[in-house]
Amino acid sequence: MINTVAEFLEQFKQFALSKIEEEDKDIKHTVAIGDNFEGLTAELLGKAIFKDLNLRMVERSFIYNDSGVISDELDCLLVVGNGQKMSFANRYKYHINDVIAVIQVKKNLYANDIDSSHHNLRSIFDVSEPRDAEPFVGRLLRDAYRLLTSKELPTRERRERFTDRENIIYHYLMMEAFHPLRIVLGYYGYTTEYGLREGFIKKLEEVVKEGPVRGYSPGSFPSLYICGNSTIIKNNGMPMGIPFTDDEFYFPVLTSSSGKPMYHLLELIWTRLSYKFGISSNIFGNDHDIEAAHPFISCKEKKINEDNWGWEFIYHPLTRKQLSVPLVAKPWAPIEVDKNQYTFLHVLSRQGTIDIVADKQFKKFIEVNSLDADQFIKSLLETKLIYVDEGKAGLLVDELHTVFCPDGKVYAGENKSGEMASYFLKKWAEEKKE
Image (cartoon, rainbow, N blue to C red):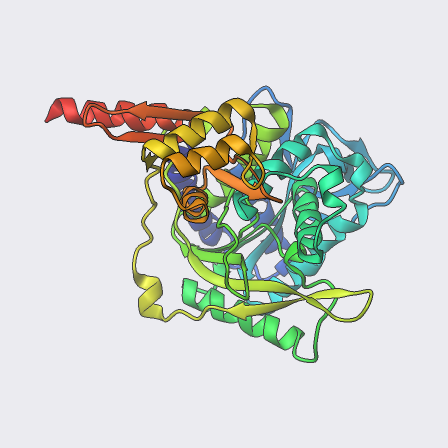
């Protein structure tokens, strides 16, 4: 479903843009041109949101919180409800809890436009108060944390033993789940993904050339940048989720792609709506493919002094030729497991956790089957079906399903959104055709 809608929006955008250019070709006043593009954005998203959720697109509005703090004027908001009319002009303000997404609209998007949009959207942080958080924020945080760190969301007691890195990442993801989506949408500007990447990184290098600058951390980057047909996507697990690596710069914070910009925009918005309103994940269709993206910027935390931390970034340069190779989504597939892995997963699903250091039954299982405990656990960690934290193993999936095939192979995987069911129904249907 989401693909079909995204394709429709892409065609609509091109049609609408051609109309604006034809009708406004003699307009030189930048404010008038900007108004047209802001209105187009509102129409684009208005055709993609769900009915019966009291959602609406509004232009030139403000966000406020319980303390009465108000944001800067924002181009375009996706909100719930009618908001409050302000005492001046024809402007409205919306409570932070009623804001799904904030879109900064630009006719042209170049380096300076990216930077100004960055600062405009940061005004949202001034009105974000943790006490305003809704229950869905915790669910979104949990899934993102598991996706990126390959560990279960920690309890308060566990967080008391966090390392500095664990603490920084936890609070970063918590605020990412709490803040509304921040999107920069430019219709023109850099004509290629290569140009967008180069323009972005040169501006970032210019800003931080004298050292760390406040307001340029992973959390400060918007959720998505769209420039024509190219995109820069934040990897925060909401929904883009590339797990942390063992590299020094372990956190791939930004990725890029070309093609399907409206798909990425819709995926961000619909993911947030599905958590907020408890909508079934079936809205995304049943293929469960994993979208591919080009590596762009990775980072790591850096201690500046006794009381302050900053971030270091590394750029992954790619040539025009490398970026011209079409990105291909990776089909979701279950993990083939052997007899011993299946037994461990089965016991784990019943017990919840297994102490792989002190559990006598686990030690006996390892001995009886002549296994190397470290290698065995490592093989299971690589499946992303389990995690190990402080010597205890647990499941990283919510609904573990296993399937025994006629050829004797055994598969395991998540079925929370029907992944296993869809995969094998499709597989068996293809086999029948043969």
